[in-house]
Image 1 (tube, rainbow, N blue to C red):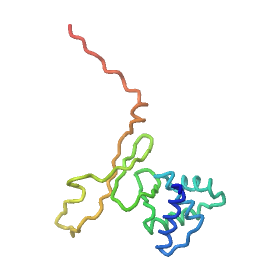
Image 2: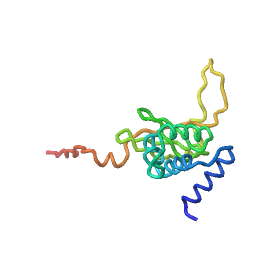
Image 3: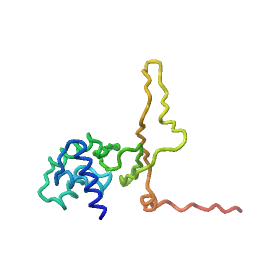
Image 4: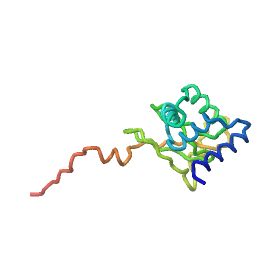
Length: 159
């Protein structure tokens, strides 16, 4: 069985479990997100249209919203970016975003003591038990670092 067939069978089972019909639109969107993680809706539409050319933008937005509500997709919004989607759900992973090119990488949750799960509550707060922390790392990826033309360090000669 190919990965594509296995994915489709798993998605069909999940859709049925949520009381949803298995449609070619839903499967095309799930496949597009699976193969192009961290993509915006426009990118998912373009990828899904390769499999289903008649797919409309409205259909993609409706499917993305529904699958996100069902927790079959995860939606996250990096700063200065449209919402991005991925099929990696069910864990508390984070994201690292390159501030130069916009590339997004998954980052597994911190191991050991996770200070982001222990907030400081002020006297006006009504504390709660934190279940999930959404951490966004921002930096410059190695590819962008390599492209930067940094000046060579000058050597100081002693006299």
